[in-house]
Length: 63
Image (cartoon, rainbow, N blue to C red; front, side):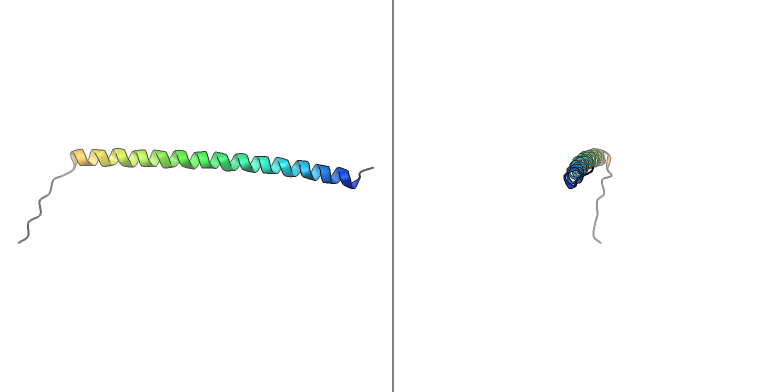
């Protein structure tokens, strides 16, 4: 016979599994987002450095 305690215990077990899985997915998504942000910042800084070296020098004169 299945009792109320059996059902509650199984519900708690399922809830813990879902919570653990959700925590894992959130932490993986955060690591992924931080990795992309770091790569984007590095690309920006490298491009900025190259632009300073090779950029055109323009003089503006007012008439």
